[in-house]
Image (cartoon, rainbow, N blue to C red; front, side, top):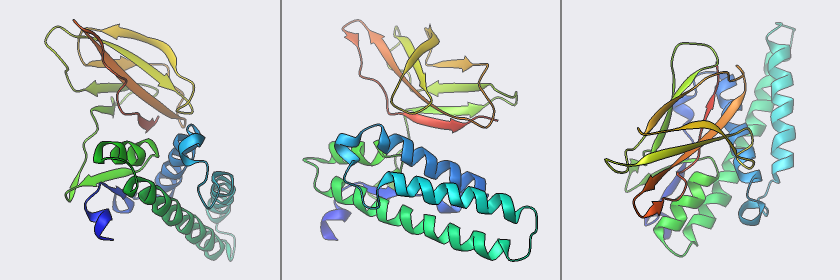
Length: 211
């Protein structure tokens, strides 16, 4: 426990997920992001495939409970509890990896690349890239941290945090609009800068559920 306090802590923002659909979306993000790097996360217990099945059952339970069928809410709540337990065990696995990483920077990468939030010294780590809703369906704005006064920026998007597409135009500012996205689908994004000495590394991956 003492060692964990010296390292970044994995966090799951339950208090920010006001709707069950938001909780389900966040669990799917974790499954996708960890599944994109099985070299690091492949030994997770429970296996990601099991977490996915439990999540699918919760989705079905939610759909049934929305129809007000007798007994469906209680069943949905049991399915929800099962996914919460999965989440807790997966987060403990990720925290253990982070605690045993060679340094704090590597520990932070392990947590964030698994789809969890992170705290360092009790403060939430702010992502260098933020996806924002514009108010228009299928459109989002990406706002990144400016890297240099004369930097150019490249952007990528993905549906699984594994296969990346270069179909977003480059910009001379650390922000861009992305249009034509499918509502109800989770998208992942990252960016990098082109400086006078060459490209920076790709940023931390961020995600958004498009509306």
